[in-house]
Image (cartoon, rainbow, N blue to C red; front, side, top):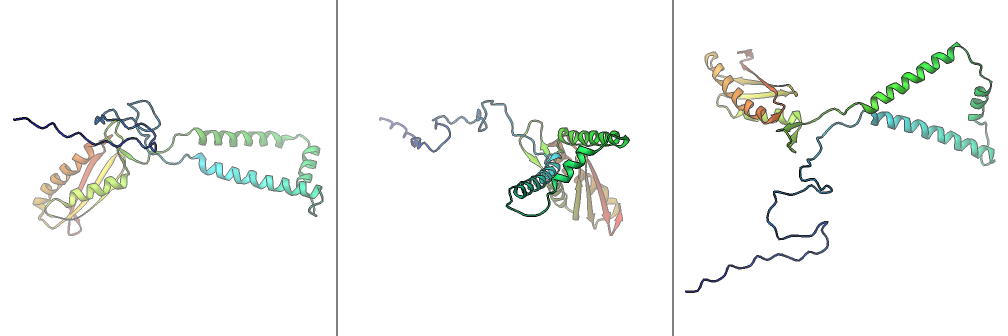
Length: 219
C-alpha cells in the first residue's frame, strides 16, 4: 500500500509591501527588532519626558517674541509700518552703559542661570515604569502593579475589599475582612504570599506590606 506524500504548505509570494523579504523559516527565536541588526537588542525602558523640555518651550517662546519685535522694527525702517522702534532704545542703552559693580553680579547671575540650564539638560529622566524581570521588555506602571495586587488580594476567601499603594520600594496592601481576629493572621499570610509572587516578578522586587482591618479596626 502506497502512502500519499504530505501536502505542501502554501506560502504566498512576497508582494513588495514588506520591509524585508519573506522567508520560509518557522523559527522565530532569532527575531530582531525593526531598525537594528543586533539580536540581543531590547526595547528602551519607558521614562518620563526630559526635564529640559518645558524650559526649551519657554526659551523658544522668548526667542520667537524677540524675533517678532525685530521683524516689526525692520518693517518700521522700511516704512511699511508706523510707530516707534522697540530695539533702538535697547541698543542705545548698551552703547552708553558704564561698567559698574552691578555688572559683576549680573555676570554671576548669568553664570548661575547657565549652570541651571546645563543641570536640567544633563539630568537623567525619571523612571515611570517597573520592569518584569531583568532584561525584560515588559513594563508596567506602579498603578498597574497596584491593581494587580488588589485583584490578587480580593481572590483570597474572607477578603471583602482591598486597596493597594505601590512604589518602587514597597507594595502596601490594605484588606478589609469580616473574620475574627484569630483568622486575620491567616488571611494576612495568604495575601502576603499572593502579592509576594507578583513582587518576585519585578526587578528590583519591592517589599510587601499587608494590613488587615475588621470593622474599621486594624488587626
